[in-house]
Image (cartoon, rainbow, N blue to C red; front, side):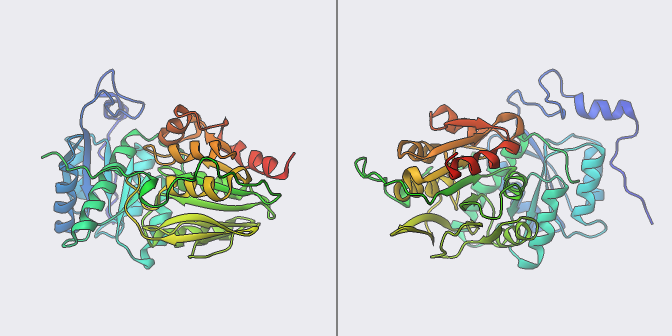
Length: 390
């Protein structure tokens, strides 16, 4: 059986692979001085390769430097150019994507974005790729559906740009037409300034995350005690994958973790994760909190949107909420966190050192909406302390 190795033959070659781009390269050899992000597309479907190439090439910040039908063909391209990001299919001939991913991460780690189909059967395998070191998941764009294709274009290009800026963490393994960047106003109106929420003994924890968030959420939720306050989470992730993500977390955490359904009650010892491609809002009926799951436009270029969840928490929970914003590219959640703080909630941002991408927390900090910045391992302890009133 043929053995596969990426084309790095000796220590000198490896050093040139990492450092050959000059003084402006980062620790992985990627040029961060304003040059276009170099991408290699790896997918066994010629149609998908062409579609992804067209989508990525429409963004002026991205250059597709190669497309390959399998990992062996991709390795040949590596001999000519060192990419900044790879988009990688999971199911391919000659070598599957997970095996290729493990080889990449073992020999010279690079940001990898998994490009997968919307299938329940493949979601578990694709989520395993995140544990092996992939930065993000995107879904293959459907052809013939204009809205889906345009939203796919936004999601795919943003994911690749986020991956190019990501800090890789040790694993347990023609210019684009930009759609308007809608605020949470598109889904939920801001609460009147005079409408204050009475403080109660029942607290809720509201969390937002994006790139790098799957592992950050795992660490956070694993650290929560069985009787922790109710948790509502928006993690930027495609539909179908959030259910599998919640199921996997449910098997390793002391608390119950599930994908949210419309009108689910917020319960102690339970975390609800917003379904992919749906917005989730916190609502209150009497002394009880529940969630609303609904359709709507992309907000801050995302659905679900952290801003939508945070604004609803500001409106319906106020000082009864603790807000947490974690690793992620962009600014989704920053404005909503400021609204939560203004409504009396205590707000926490993950620190730069433990973020894969310090975009979302940094934007919230710059807006002045963060009460405390903490490393990831300390967030769960602080949330429990705040909710216990100590």
